[in-house]
Each structure stands twice: as structure tokens, then as C-alpha cells.
Image 1 (cartoon, helix red, strand yellow):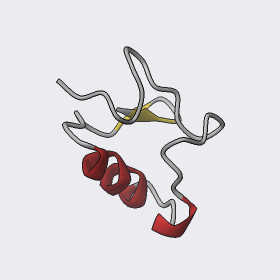
Image 2 (cartoon, one colour):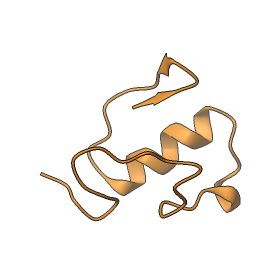
Image 3 (cartoon, helix red, strand yellow):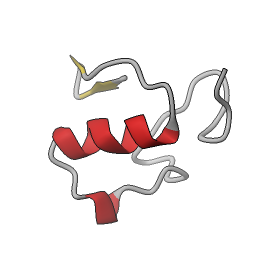
Image 4 (cartoon, helix red, strand yellow):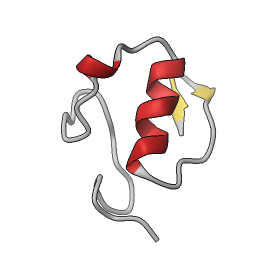
Length: 50
């Protein structure tokens, strides 16, 4: 997972995504996993985890 070209880590769940974004400075109440302006999903969406 990256934010502003900085590698944040490898997310294994939706909770990981929220935590990485929180650590990057985004308040949890502003994190919407279905917001395409905030998150670009590759290989699926917020509900696709292997």
C-alpha cells in the first residue's frame, strides 16, 4: 500500500488499510473504503482479499 509515493506496508485486510491511512495522518472518520477519490483498488475492491 502506498500514499503519496510512500510505501506504507502490505495490507492483508480492510482493517490494515484503515490503520495504514490513520498512521499516514488521515482521521479514521474520513476514511471511506468505497471512496474512489481516496483509494485506488487494484485487482478487486475493498471486499476482495486472498
